[in-house]
Length: 478
Image (tube, rainbow, N blue to C red; front, side):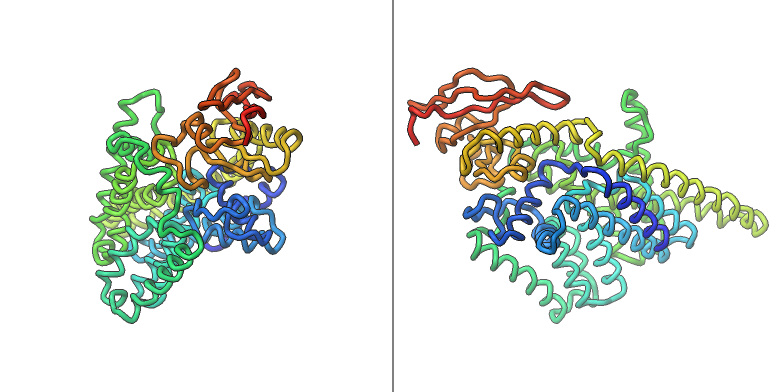
């Protein structure tokens, strides 16, 4: 499994090295924090403004360290993601060996490695989180209390919602719940929270305040459940088949607990069955943006792992009922299955890596990225240095300009109220930015008493969205 993971990572890196990686706009927020850290400006988005606007301290600090060493933060994110995915496939294989026959454990690891839909967003911390959570589960199962406690704390620095996975395992594990081991978890967590309170004046990231309450509970839950249970086998045009596919996925995930070896490992059983739904429920209660599915990526990863374990468990039990001569005949089909998985992976890996390039013009791909790159290039040529710009998606634009960003969504700008979030005119009326980037085509606009904005540039719609750059009328004063 290790050789396959290494070959995959090298193949991905080789293809992606000659492309321009495309990441989500949220990923560029972390990239900007990391680059400013490498520049010596501190862990900030806007120079001199201490706002905790990233979700993953560990991912951001890691990218900052690599950027300090001379690497481009964007390429560093993709390169490390390939490493975490390869490591995760090996650890998944290792965990699978304890509950499945070795050939089936190899199938489990290979399926994850070669299925790009299970990897999450390469620019974000998704793959790092899963790797740390798998390492934690293996350490907890082995009874390595101190190691498991440290890995649990580090995984919470990758994403704070990892607490939902690690806390029950730590508290109910015979070795991990010992105070001498739990103190390591507490020490790491308190160290970061102490720094955050002293540096930012906050104990939770500003992104939580910016996203909470944006989507009604049931609407978010319906979207999240649909994403987590999607196998991708049924044509979305046929809703009946899609519903049947999801029902089959839930049934197979539940069958994972039929495996006696899973039941003997409470930490793994918890991660495979209840944890994904607890995480989905938690995010539904927060009510973040519907469609930001990367926020609960680990729920999808462990759910899909449960589906695979359930399927392989049933297959293993059925095969075990055969007589030995017939059972021996399974060797050839198993070898053929592994060969097909590997062959599919070679083609899928190349296609996946190529899709990371700017040639991808889908909404979440190159079209969105190119639109903000175009506006950023124009801003660099036409806007005075130090100008303030109000914009609702700050990542890509902020990374490719050195202007002062006012975040209308409230992630990297402190004090944006719920009434103001995503309401450009309200934010413009109160904060009076020099410029504003608005969706659609605009004419002269009055944002507030004596506050007029005039269009200075228009960017027609391509495959994403059209934009107007508005300039504050100089007669309105500072």
